[in-house]
Image 1 (cartoon, helix red, strand yellow):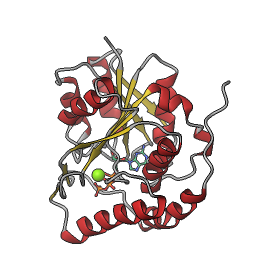
Image 2 (spheres, helix red, strand yellow):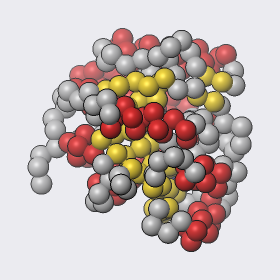
Image 3 (cartoon, protein in one colour):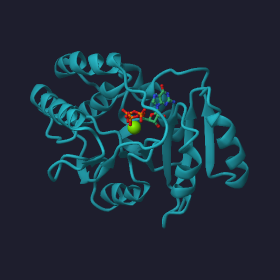
Image 4 (tube, rainbow, N blue to C red):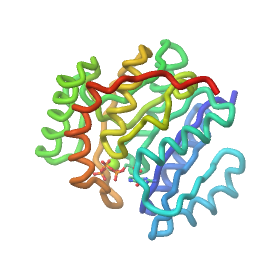
Length: 243
Ligand SMILES: Nc1nc2c(ncn2[C@@H]2O[C@H](COP(=O)(O)OP(=O)(O)OP(=O)(O)O)[C@@H](O)[C@H]2O)c(=O)[nH]1
Ligand SMILES: [Mg+2]
């Protein structure tokens, strides 16, 4: 059955994009792929366009006018997926920090273990991060701890971006009320799911720093996350009104 869509947002990923797409299509389960492309100056979109001829009906691309941020890229992808029949909707980075093989574990947690959202978690069994400088590991680990303390969510890896959502969860979230765009977007989505009472399962994964292409992390993204979680703690969350 054709039930799963992997959303991959891209900005300047020409070194990774073809390999990651081919890797997903080589897995033992059928996943469709949606690239949300923000007009990368490096020509990422042109590479995807050529591959779309090789994988008609399985590889899709939505092109936006410019770099509008990770959060809105995912929301764009979620809306696209909900207009189609997908039951399981995944988030994955293009840079191989997330191992595409782990899509199967995330799928299993949602399809067979009853999760509404499965999170690929770096911090569920110790710290599973490869190739990050110690400073960045510590920062990420303590950021996760900080978020846990402030929001009181029982999630070990609160900033993780490797996920599988059940369709019903995404259908319940009011995307107009999702405000953050960087790491805080990932926290906000978890916080929203948690406050709405959805079942969350963390699946241990190993996260590997990118070896190709360049990072898009910025100080602004970081600031948004630090201040944003305090707002999240007090934010009232209501399910989306039925249309
Ligand atoms: N469409 C879109 N994709 C983005 C944007 N910012 C980042 N991405 C993509 O989102 C994914 C995660 O971004 P990364 O640059 O890897 O961010 P990171 O993982 O925090 O940092 P590094 O791994 O150190 O580079 C990658 O696939 C990026 O290409 C954006 O504004 N728009
Ligand atoms: Mg990355």
